[in-house]
Figure 1 (cartoon, rainbow, N blue to C red):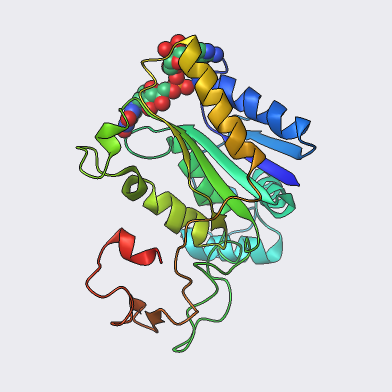
Figure 2 (cartoon, rainbow, N blue to C red):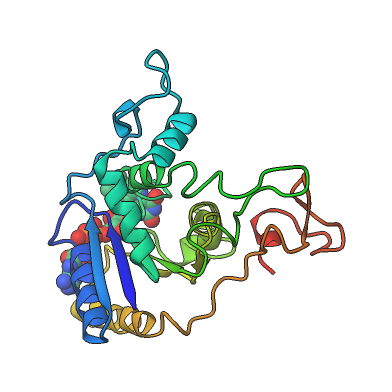
Amino acid sequence: MNVLLVYAHPEPRSLNGTLRDFAIERLAAAGHTVEVSDLYAMNWKAVLDAEDTTGRLDAGRFDASLDSKHAYRNGLQSADIVREQQKLMRADTVILQFPLWWFSMPAILKGWVERVYAYGFAYGVGEHSDVRWGERYGEGTLAGKRAMLVVTTGGWASHYGPRGINGPMEDILFPIHHGILYYPGFEVLPPYVVHRTGRMDETRFETIRNELGERLDTLQQTQPIAFRPQNAGDYEIPALTLREEIAPGRVGFAAHVA
Ligand code: FAD
């Protein structure tokens, strides 16, 4: 299969850099084709702005959504955005790899999402009406593809446990899993998280390599997170609230996992 690894770390000799090289080798050895978007090495432009289109709708006022729609529809997107969209379309599986920075992805990767996920490509897809709210959350341009996060954290696993002070890791990653990956259609695999990176030695590093290797070997068999599809009956439309009889009494992020 084709795997796209989108990687965000400024230092090739970091732990992340070593794990990236390991992942590329492991996937290639298994016969997969691997494409890498190494965002720092590419000097990826992280900010979404009027430079992202070669033909604005209105020269006097840039509109982040409508100019994106216009540029996507009319072949006016900047070339770096088009290249990344093409990589996404070629991929069967996409891996986003990054260190957790301030409880989220590094800004350069967030900027990749903002710019590459154009209107008409990742959002604003399908019929939007009183009976249908587009193709998203389980449907959309990237449906049929899988995605997985590889994340490293300074904090310990217990800090991210069910009652840990940082909040549960599945809650912290929910906006990425559900909002960035499930929204345009990906099936989202459970993440591979390396905690407490400050406490690393050769033995632990070997264990991490083995665990990550196992996750890479089983990308096609791993059960995705059971997010609820938007258009399969669990949600009232157009309120887009879970129906009363679905997961009664459950609220918050967890309610959206079946
Ligand atoms: P490195 O610093 O490169 O390495 C970590 C350890 O692994 C080092 O001991 C290194 O010697 C060892 N190592 C590296 N390569 C190898 C190898 N090949 N073999 C054996 N050992 C190796 N953490 C949180 O938990 N939550 C946050 O919100 C958060 N926010 C942050 C915000 C910022 C701006 C920054 C800079 C850090 C933040 N951190 C946070 C910590 C951050 O997540 C970790 O520093 C990061 O995940 C470590 O990954 P790295 O690739 O940079 O590791």
